[in-house]
Amino acid sequence: MQLDRRSFAFGAASAALLPTASTVRAQAPTIFQRVRPSDPSWPDEGRWKALGEKVGERLVKVRSPLRDCIAAEALQGAACADFIKHVKNPFYIGDEIGLTQNFGWLDAWTSQPSEYAVVAANSADVVAAVNFARKNRLRLVVKGGGHSYLGTSNAPDSLLVWTRRMNEIAVHDEFVAQGCAQASPRQAVSVGAGAIWLQAYNAVTTARGRYVQGGGCTTVGVAGLIQAGGFGSFSKRYGLASASLLEAEIVTADGSIRIANACTNPDLFWALKGGGGGSLGVVTRLTLETHALPQFFGSVSMAVKATSDLAFRRLIRQLMAHYAERLLNPHWGEQIILRRDNTLLVRMVFQGLTQQEADAAWRPLFDWVAASPQDFQVNEKARVSAIPAARIWDAAFLKQLPGIVVGDDRPGAPTTNFSWAGDAGQVGQFLYGYQSLWLPAVLLDASARDRLCDALYAASRHWSVSLHFNKGLAGAPEETLRAARNTAMNPAAIDAFALVICAATGSPAYPGTASHEPDMALARSQAAAIDRAMAELRALVPAPASYCAECDFFEAKWQQAHWGANYPRLLAVKDRYDPDGLFFVHHGVGSERWSADGFTRLT
Image (cartoon, rainbow, N blue to C red):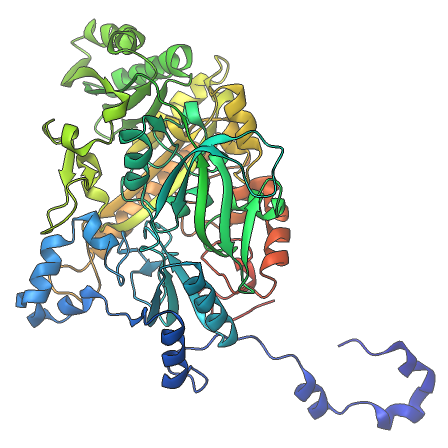
């Protein structure tokens, strides 16, 4: 406690006028604590009823379908059987207010429903929910697509703003952001906060022959991806999804509906482009620039197993040299995976090339492998394919191709709903561990490449290593890099040739449910293997950095890892628009001021 300077002038004679210890305690600031349903100050039924009336009776008491399966005897019930049947359908999960696309993470979080939810139909509903949470000291959660490895779209004892119904989409031939009258019109698309990327792609690409940069998984929410920065399969050409943002409508902590663009609230606009979802407000609408569509999109796949450790080392070196010389350019994205059994999996995509041109880019590596049959066993023959770009999200076309997509099997579901067959393992997954690291492009230089290859090999002895080339922007056009620098994304992404990811997951699992409990011993063993693998790779990078949406829940230096030099600027924006910290997510901007559950203010 700091005494007023004038008190020293009165000497000992004024001692009787100083506050007593009991008075000091009474005047000490009270720690801010959010309320739970068990607290006396939790809103009574009358206040909840008033909120429901204000939002057009779109306030609901949330009940998770998981409850139908918690008791062992309930596993035989019809409701639980229906849940088990549909739990691998991402559209089913996305339409369930009490579920999230991931079911939890070992020792971190499990999917738990909010107490109440506002099923928002418009921005006014969001305003009502934000004001109610602020005035009643409630924990507030925002969910659109529900894809969050870190569990940020769920929290028990909270009020949820569910934007799923706010999925309107409008395509613009000439869009000018509000307050930017002198700007040149852009071709664009406006998307409601609850829309998923498949809906945006159908409106822009399938229906209009344009391209909008978004996420790879079809059920990822548009708003969440943009706020995280956003990588898609073709980011090496079109850049960050957030870099295409022209304008956002957002409800901030004071209940105001604000427009954010380059001319109006530009600081908030910058922060929304990669500063992380759920920290700055509730985004209700986004307008994104669209791009000319290339003639073709395509893929390259192959699986090669080395017959010895030495041969696998040679394969990694050849791969990295080939990538540096022929694939580090705007045409290529997606993954190559190095497995512990000395298998190399190619799961790459391309844009702007014909099938023949794509084959030519890979042919030297294919031939190099084929020339050493004693060292390399081709378990999956190299396949290069291309399709007209306008058909890449056309469900009717894709369903004719065996094994490419999985439809939405619910009765009456839209025929346009599909997810990629290769993403099936991610639906409802329980995470054992997940870590990422950007690999700077300087590691591809001849002087550093041996160190890179040695570290990749060493890491693959512990766990599978995935190189996501589309999630590092090195090799992109200069205009793409320039746009990325004008976002809140960690600058490490701009200088990286790939984001390396090590992850381990289990099938849908939920504590307390017979036959569907997580295998905790296996989970901890695999999490430890990931730690060892990533330690080999982190040794390559003086200041390790990771993608805020695909990262380690337990990252200690998350401010630096997720945002680097941009974090102080992000925190200043947070303080301007949410000074009291209404919006809290795990390892979000300003979250260091709160307890881990977001209920108690620490500073």
